[in-house]
Structure formats: C-alpha cells, structure tokens
View: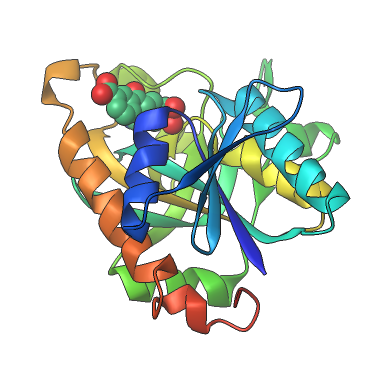
Amino acid sequence: MRVLVATAVPAERDAVARAFGDPASEHPLHGTALTILRCGAADVVAAGVGPAAAAAGAAIALTVAALEGRPYGLVVSAGIGGGFTGRAPLGSVVVADAIVAADLGAETPEGFVTVTGLGFGTDRHVPPPALVRETADATSALTGTVLTVSTATGSAARTAELLSTHPEAAAEAMEGFGVAEAAAAHGVPALEVRAVSNAVGPRDRESWRIGEALAALTDAFAKLLAPGGSWSDTPRIRT
Ligand SMILES: O=C(O)c1cccc(C(=O)CC[C@H]2O[C@@H](n3cnc4c(=O)[nH]cnc43)[C@H](O)[C@@H]2O)c1
C-alpha cells in the first residue's frame, strides 16, 4: 500500500523527500499544476498553503492514483507548525490525535459555534489511535490535537481565544483538516505530523526556527518510511 504525504510548500516537501536518501523522481499530475515526488514507499506533493489548497491537492492526487489502479492506503499532512507554549516546544514533533478545523463555524451572540454544532458536517477528524501511537513512538513525538486555521495566530488574545475553545490543542498549522477531508472522501485514513518551528502567539518571524523544524521533519520521516522504518512493518501500509 502506498502513502501520500501532502505538504504546503516545496521546502517541506523536500524535507520529507530527504528522508529517503535516494533521488526522487518527479511526476506532473496531468492537466494540473501539481507535481508528485515519488520517493520509495511514499509520494510527496506540495499542495499549497491553507486548508482549501491542501484539500484540492490531496483530492487530485488521491483521485488520479485511484483511477490509475494504485490507490493510497494512508494520507499524511506534514510540515512545520506552531506549538502552544508549555505543550509543544520548538523542534519537537507532534502527531495529531485529532485534526480540528479551529475556525470553521459561526460567531453567535453566545460565542463561536463549530460547524458540527451548526449541524453541517464535522469540524474534526480522528486518526486511527493505534497508528497515532505507533507513529509517535517511532519518532519520539508528542501527541495532541493539531488545529487547522486559515489565519496563522499572531496575538496573545487570539491564542487565548483558541485555547479556551480548544483546551486540548498542542499545535496549529493551516492544512491538516483539508487533507483529512480529502482522505475521508476517499475512505482512506489520515494522519498529521508537524515539526514545531515557532510558538503560537504574537507574531515574531525572526524567532521562527524553520531550519531546525525541517530537519526534525526529515528525521521523523526517516524513522517512519525508510526501509526498516516503523511504517514499513505496518501491515496496513507495507508496500
Ligand atoms: O521561509 C521559509 O524558508 C519557509 C520554509 C518552509 C516553510 C515555510 C512556511 O512558512 C510554511 C507555512 C506553513 O507553516 C505552517 N505554520 C508554521 N507555523 C505556523 C503557525 O504558527 N500557525 C499556523 N501555521 C503555521 C502552516 O501550515 C503553513 O502552511 C517557510
């Protein structure tokens, strides 16, 4: 079974691809702007920033693979992310035990109501718990809720607001929920793996540790997908 890894930007895609050592081959997805990197057991795509681009990119890759008779068995949203202070420090890796659309819903006089509360669809996807545990153990990662936001948090006030609505949040990023929606539409399990580059809070781009986070991402995928890695021993995922 093959694994699709969806990142936002090429630098994250290349960090995942580096885990495989061997040079990846590039495959344009016919008629679209997307290119898949085929690396060992995984295909890696940089689908764009934000949940809409992530959902569109993952859905295209899933559909093309299914029509070609080589469907994916797992989809992973991967990249760098913001960590909530005291929960996910810089350089740590977080494996989502819940992938939550933090700002999908409506403001009401009583406060924010999730899309689930409004009765339309869902605001969360829960990855298979055994796979989350196995993935976190193999990579020495933390587990916790990873929020998907359309606007990266940039103030203490918004951080507090998010934590009051989602007290279990460990990290935030901008694509996980979109990737998980595409995976759910195809009946394929989804995971989210984030390497923490910055603290969620007042925006201070100078303090972001992108290089360290990308290195942590490479290290995590080397432990998962390289020959002998944790996922290569998983019956659901064995290639
Ligand atoms: O400038 C660079 O060299 C560079 C290299 C790799 C990635 C980036 C990005 O800016 C990626 C954007 C991506 O990162 C996620 N992210 C990271 N921190 C946060 C955050 O605090 N809140 C929300 N999202 C975050 C997000 O998924 C973006 O798509 C730059």
